Length: 247
Image (cartoon, rainbow, N blue to C red; front, top):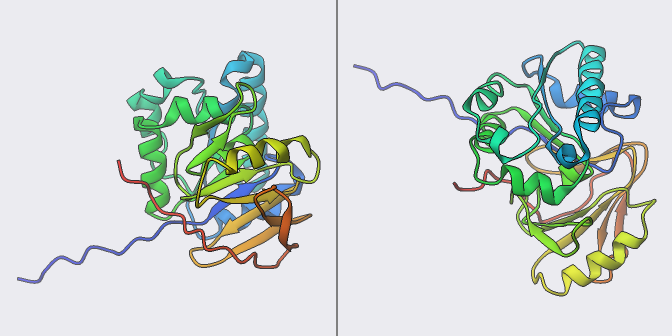
């Protein structure tokens, strides 16, 4: 008898997007994330769950239209809270994804709604098996061990997909976030703060972090000011290594 060989899998790419989800600015970035993967894009607008049905519906409509421009199947999950994230039918719809995308809103609500749920487990399992994972604005912030929670103040636990990361999106626009980040960093030893400009993604490919899109990404100091910057197509030197968090 021959031993069965189990195919080796590795996580797919991870994109931390400063802004611009489902817009023309991200078409090339998202096409790159989907390259060689199933033509199936799962859209998760949970970060907007406290903004009402109109906001959630808008993100889902934008995501569907974006997927159609990319030539892939949109899978829109109208998950707004923890109850929806514990629904096994919602989790099952992640199966076969080539790209899973968390859109913007409130990072605290997103993280609190999904941490430890069957939906997040399904997303992380898909990513660990090779699907691409992307988060924009709040969706990117929630990928760290900790995330700023602007609407309630302070810091909330994140998904911990990128250990020791504190992510600041819209970095070239919202300067006030830097003060909040500096306060948070004082209580988060070992944390690396990273700023990502609007219409820009910082993409991990299993080895390097490369800037994609229109502007720049930055490694920040304890005052949340840039100490190292990379522009489009450049590698941003970071010791941060994404991995599937343990259950």
